[in-house]
Image 1 (tube, one colour):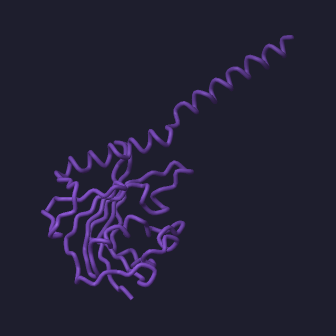
Image 2 (image 1 turned 60 degrees about the vertical axis):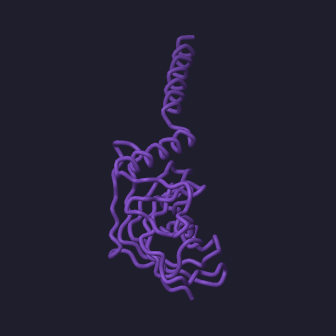
Image 3 (image 1 turned 90 degrees about the vertical axis):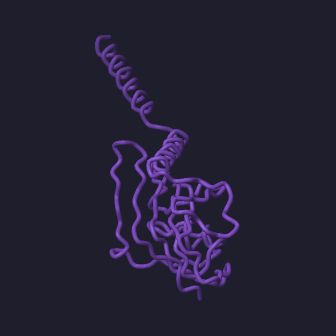
Length: 190
């Protein structure tokens, strides 16, 4: 009887410990809400002005960003040479000056990546499989500006994890990283 009682008490303690540790993990919805708050803090901290409509003349003020329906923020520095990428025909090459994670919590570490350390990335415009490659920085967020800009365009982007790369959006492992990209340049439409 004594062994049975010890077994029951031990089981109850272990069960309560495991249940309390589950309560500490945040749900996907909670993490996405944290991400939205982090992006909002980043916008406020940097004094960015968010536009609901893409400027008719295609020109942006210094700190103006257009917000797409998918939560991506686009700031066009240079709209390019006017040559537009053709879906399912053109391969597009992307380079950027740097990228960094937007801190979701105050304890998050921000990683800066200099473009000199990274080779250019290419994807087939309009072929989603080419910009959702596992383990790559290529992402859907890079594709959206191509409906507004042409070859040799330069944009700055704030990309939420939902349209980010496989590296920055892996909900199975609890990874939800919004990213700021500076100087994304589109070249080699061929």
